[in-house]
Every structure is written in C-alpha cells, then in structure tokens.
Image (cartoon, rainbow, N blue to C red; front, side, top):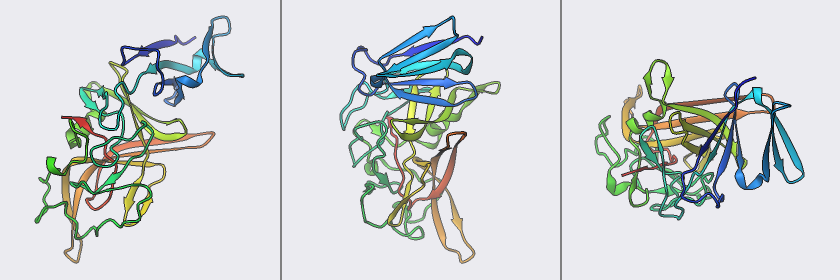
Length: 286
C-alpha cells in the first residue's frame, strides 16, 4: 500500500475562515483534483479498507490510498481587497494570488479572469469590452524603435500599489531546475470551482499558485479557450516579414489544460507574441 502523505499548509493566523481555501488531491500519475473546503463536511480515513472518504452533504466520495500521492489544505488568500493581496511565495518569488482587474485593482476571486492588457500599457479590456486592440504592425508598446531590450516601465504598470508585472526571469522560476532532474516547482492542470487553470506547487513549502485559463484578446474578440496567457515585463526579438513589416514582440507565460471524462493534457511554457495582444497579468511584489 502506498503511504498517504497528509500535508497541511495554512497561510493564515486563523484557520476558521475558509472563504477562499481549497483542498487539493494529488492523484498518482499527476492529475490534481481541487475542491472548495467550504463544500466538505468531513473526511474519514479507513485503514481496514485502505480508503479515504469525503462527506459532502448526502454525497460520499471514496478514494483508495494506492491512487493518492498527497493531500494539501491551502489558505490561498490571507489579505483580501481589490487593492491588497496576501501573496504566495513560489520558489522564492512572491506572486499575487489573483489576476489584475481594472488598473490598480485585483479581481475579487482567485478564479476570476480579470482584465487583459496591451504590453507596456495601462489600456485594459474587460471580457465585455467592444473596443478593438490596435494593429499588430503599428503597436510597439510605446517604443519608437522596438528592440529586444525594451521593458515594461513602472508608469505604465496596471498592477495595484506595491505590485508589478513579473519579469521573464521571475516567470521562469516557475520552471527552474536546481538539482538533478527535479524541478523546484511542480505544475498540473486542474479545475477550481468549475474554472480550468494550472496550479504551480513549490515542492519545498507546498505553497500553491493557481492561474485561470483566461485566454487572450486580439482585435475585438476574446479567444484562447482552454489556454492562459500572462505577460512578462520583457520584450522579445522582433519579427520581420518578407515585406519588411516589423512586428514588435514580448514574452509571456503560456498555459494549456484540456480534459474529458477519460483523459487530460496540459502544457506550460514561455513564448513570445505580438505586443498588441491583450493578455492577463499576474503580478509579483515590488
């Protein structure tokens, strides 16, 4: 029988309020199941049957120990307002637990998509906005002659006070490997409160960062179902086509999670795209 590892991570001085708390069940094979703690009445362990039972009202769900690697209870948001956030440290970097909403604010809940922004701009688009994003040829993020050395300047940062858009290197810490082939951070596709996303778990502290798959905005429409796009503060090399048109690029964190009743796939990477795309922002502390 596989040993059941029971991990409790509480990022709060109080464990009585579970408004934004989640329970994560790590299944053998990499699949992660997320539940809202407020929906669970009790959990029972039965050693005779090598099983774990979740009681949710009149519903009882059974898990066999052999198919569970670990369980984590996580307090993911300790200071909640539209301008303040408790943050969570993943591999040495403190990320906000929620996406940026309108400039200077966070969304209410960790599963909310928030606004999408042009690179190096406070110009944000809500999911219901009918405004077009600018042309990918003419928009350079405010730089007359765009280069790979361009960066998102503080004056154009829509993050709340005390926070900023993460750099390429900071986003890359979500994938860093420091010893052997073992990463400092695990990542898995999951669903939290019916919202698909990817969670990043610090392998040492067990802190968890959830990023919803908010898609992207291009021209007047929202797209990228099953995918997430999060800006970095760093530019990428320009693309020049055969007609000598220059397309200014910037780096972003790419996430994907697609699943059915019988299978699931997920992907995480850092890519580059047109600065004229409107993408999500997950801030880091200044």
